[in-house]
Image 1 (cartoon, rainbow, N blue to C red):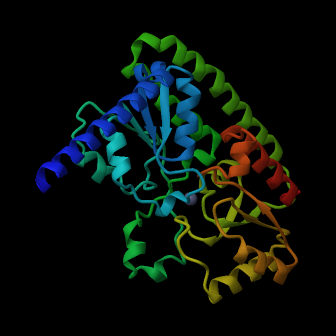
Image 2 (image 1 turned 30 degrees about the vertical axis):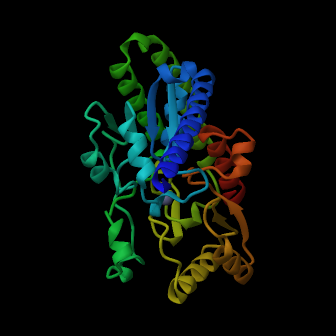
Length: 320
Ligand SMILES: [Zn+2]
């Protein structure tokens, strides 16, 4: 008797639940009706997401994997990431050692139709200058992401344009029906990337100084392209806080080279930069590695192009 009651109760609960979820999913379908037909693109980090959106326009549904506001170097995928990729058509990642988790996750997927793109494919990848990271070689956590490569290719607009092109080519291959649409978007944005490169070249030549102090050494490609030199509080993976020796080295560098600005970034605690600034009288300003947007940047509808323009203004301000 007791059991029967239990069964009836469970049945009633089930019917209720089924009713709820049915109407819920019906609503969902109505709201996202056209979204469901679109090809689903997952992009690992913000620059890939932004570039993919610029090419995809309204033809594809582009989603970001590493959440906004999260520093991507230490991020690890979870069950949701796997679930999303099982359901995706295209997966775009930067590569060059940025997302150390990609190979493992791609190999584990049942989704055999997933098209994957390493957007940095075909670019010349720089070795990272990890002078102060080598001291921490024993730490397991550190070893984990240690590839010896500098992944920040997109911080040179020329490389960014190449990544944009790789993404466009993949979209054309997967969805040839909309080839002209993707080609047109590429044409429009690659022109803007060229203009950005031109502005960098013009504004960064003939400056008084060329040495910058930054939060983490993300600017290898930018420096190489436009003749600058970077000194990082943290290495290329933004993982280790500078120790006393490194702090002293940076302070000496700032004094000897008459550096007047210390660049910090949105997703890193500016505390260390502020300490060094007060020690040396330098100013603290933002130089974004465009690894993820802050809430303020999202609210202001910023993108790769607008942030890189602000970066240029801040660089010129510091080096003139
Ligand atoms: Zn970085």
